[in-house]
Structures are given as structure tokens and as C-alpha cells.
Image (tube, rainbow, N blue to C red; front, side):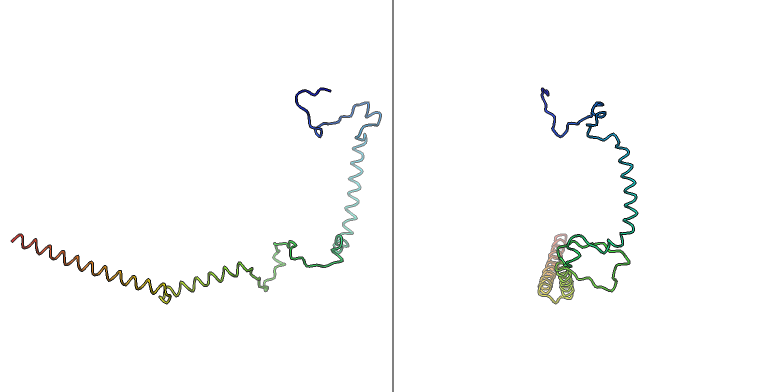
Length: 161
């Protein structure tokens, strides 16, 4: 049978029942579909009532071997959110290795900076020596400039006379 240029997908074809098939009863969809849906809803309502009664019993039961074997799996995902009433305020949380190392690193840096401000570290001592040397050089340069300026002024004064 010719389909033209493009083929349709085999999963995309729809089967429609002809009125003759429906009357003959060979249709895939039953004629009493609405009746079956209504019966299914009634059954669901009954099962809901029964499940409410048996929900207390089922809470103790677990699927498969979970009830038989009680294993603490470290890889198993634990719930991360806790409700306020479940939170234990007295319990101290253990820090991970990375968090501990980060806190130690921050404390060491703060300690080093405090010693740096006091001038007790080797780097601070070198910095202070360098600073003192620079100050001395600047003072000498300023003194030299003043002398040159005074000499210049003196020459100007002698030239005017």
C-alpha cells in the first residue's frame, strides 16, 4: 500500500473501532467502559476505608528483608531536614575533615596576623627594617634638597648684589 514520500511511525498509528466492530463486540474498548470506571471508584473507596484501619499495622511492617535485617548503611541517604520538635539542641554536631581543616587554617591565619601586627614574626621584622631604611633615605634626600635650595637662594642673592 503506497504511503507517499514519508512513512509514518509504527507507534503513531491509531486504531479506531468501526460501528460494526462495536456492535459485533470485537472492539478493543468495551461498550460498558463508564460502568467499569464507576465500579472501580466504588472499589477504591472501600479499599481506602480498609487501608485506614490497617495503616497502623503496616507502619511496623517493612518491605522485603528490611524488617529482618537491620543494617546501618553509611551510603544510604539520610533525611537532611529536621523538624523543630525533632532537633536535639544539646547534641554537638561533628564537623567534617574539610570543615575542621578550614577552621584551623582561619585560626592559624588570625594568629599569624596578630603576631605580624605586634612585629614578632620574621617577615614583620624585615618589613620594619626596610621601612626604617626607607625613612632614613627619605630624610637624607629631604635634607639634601633643603641644602641645595638654600645654596641656590644664596647664589641668587649674591647675583642680585
